[in-house]
Length: 566
Image (cartoon, rainbow, N blue to C red; front, top):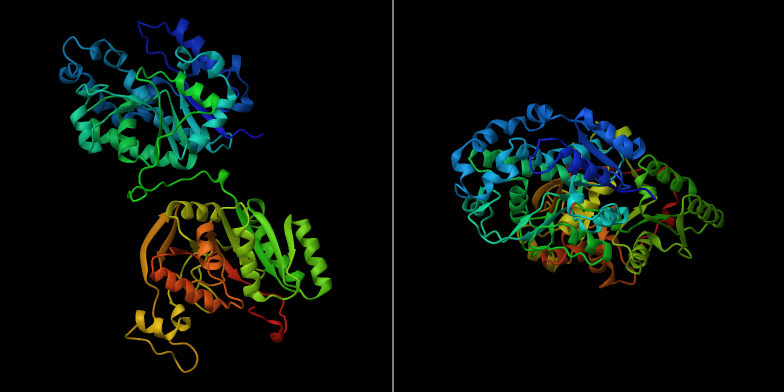
């Protein structure tokens, strides 16, 4: 099984007097190197040989980094402010003239803080290298074996269990009693930033998270480090980790260890499957997670087809160019075909591409197939689903640089993952995948045409008369709320019109639209009206991408009399 965790570590000799580098750190480092996980290791060149005595290149990448490199590059923007504080009597005496700080490695060695304060930078760099194509990265101290026994430290299974506790970033914390400072950082200033009393401190020996969030964590950390050092305040990386966990509690989850701060307790709890994570704050909080682990998410993808296997294959061929459509979800083919030859061929296509095949026993119409997809999904254990008709194709990288008639891009890389993350972040009931459709665009509130007259008068009292024929160029526009962005993809929420165009829909959204209320012979307009009214009552939350990566491409045409809504 492919490993999904990369461990990141580093080792430098700062000539500590209390611990021999050769007799203490080298043996402990060699113990850590025994862990059977991918590793990215930051080291000066003269220590490379130690790694190759224990590990192999197949799961090991060394990034050469000397102390001079750290000072001149990685930590360079912060060095002068750090050194100014380090050399000051005010900081050295923050715990008193005879206090612990002056006697600690932090206060005695001017390399100590630059190294520990650069751990987050190295974790971020490792996630960018992503040498072993993993989703999770954790920093682990090279000398952790000093307090964590070799038997449990080198248990690879423990590291594979960490992602289940990481959503999207994990710190370990121990209880803290007010002492006026936190690792040398003035406590009053720390609590001015957190806007609340600090009752715990986050450890720096083991931390990390999902690769796509690490960049955000690094940006927050970098800003805090820059601002606090410039203001004359300095602790260690643990002080800043603590502040981060207080100001963004939904992003930085915590597992609590004992007051002594030793990490072995966490390892034991992970091994036993009893490790606990701090609960997510109240959902009313303005803080929202930005990254999600999709490995736990189940999704169905439905395609509805009718009588033309060539049309079905055309749509599948478009999806093959964006392979996540066929590789990631559970695939279901709903067949409305009345032609037995077409039905047989569709079943063969389903088998070839690993679709579950469901014949609908005749032409149930577009909306009959749509309702069947909703019911099948409702009875499944999946979290989300997509619905495609067989003439709805997926734009590939061939459309890079091209835009739809509304000037929106026609291709989005990693669309499948992005729309899932948007759904998880915003808890939408549905998210439409294309702003531009064939006959309508999502700036037009097409529900206006289809709601009962009493509803039209209620919500558009100044414009409640339908045109005698055709469409109205002055039809009401969609009421949009806020434009948001995730992974470079913009989307907007509001009273987004329901149509049968492809969308991603949640379990709750599906239930509200299709299951709680049903009709014997529904039309698309019926659902459009129903959903609009639910939106006005605050029961349905929807959005649309500010992009058009799905398009309508029919290459085979059936007779007009064969077209059915239900």
